[in-house]
Image (cartoon, rainbow, N blue to C red; front, side, top):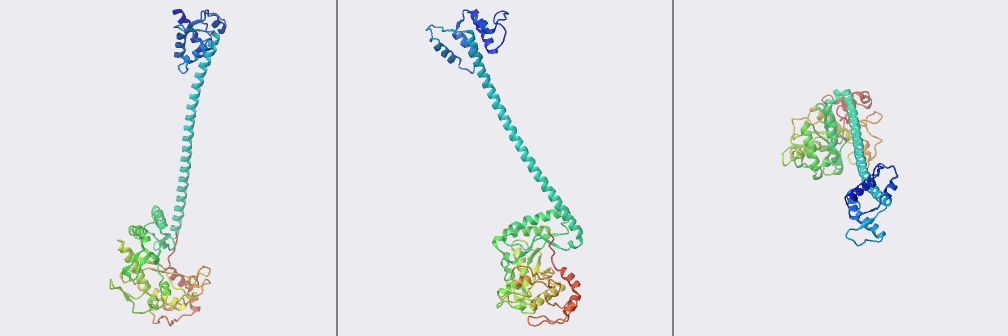
Length: 439
């Protein structure tokens, strides 16, 4: 029995390892002949299967043996089954089993390698995405740097003028555009802050009176519910940066829509009885001052009582379509001249008498190419060719004048020829009263 176990062990070693060493002694005979020379080739089947099972744990050795036994006539019925083995046959079979185990191992290794490769590809994809993101950020940084550089050059070129100019983030913003207003204003202010220019240049955005839900009487002024949230943010920014709230005030539109209820003298700054606010007792002799104070009261109701209100645009058309009541050279001259005289006097509104109301006139020139009603093309003091759209009486503007301007008659001492000769001077004067939009 002991000798038999040694032979089995030696046989298994050769079968599994595929070695070329001889089984017994140092004979150089081929392995197949050595295996065949084992006589008798009869071993205990249970012992052989035990050895095979210990060496090839991944194979069902007992099942393989049963198949082999059935192929050879089945079991002998003895307690110890005896398996007739041909050495070469079992070498091939066992080697095939070993190859199967090795193939399974290789497949597992290939699976591991594939998983590792997929992980590497995923990491590589993540790195590529990170690189692309970084490149985008770098491009944005470079663009911002170029924009800041251009802004710095512009400001340096017009530094003296910009110290006294409030920059508008955009033209008049509509209700639908309000959501974009604050991000734009904050970005502009941030750029100015980075350049160290926020102390010199104020950032704001003009609003039309359409943002008001109520404007009469002025003390009832309030913002529309749909813009209240944006206005709170806007007013908070203005208070923090000490910037003014700009409005576009056009009494002409109110008069055009209600010519039978609104006195023409009240909107033209002519002498009139005016109106008194029943809540505050403040007296108003013109509509534009009432509109400005209505905005101030609306801001106060949101908790911002010290925000300065300025007029970014106001004017009167010298021509209009049929139905555009009040659009005439006579009324335009009266409105602009009376307003400029009040500006020269440094007037404030009834609610803020001690603070001069800052107003910018629209417009210097008529816009004959502008689409829309005829009135929209004719807000200018001058025609596109430089000639006067209407005579303001330039020679009387710089001194105390006894001439009067009413809705019925206007008397001026200057002529068109004289106006043209002083055009350059008055262009400078009016430009000083016009908001320059640089951003």
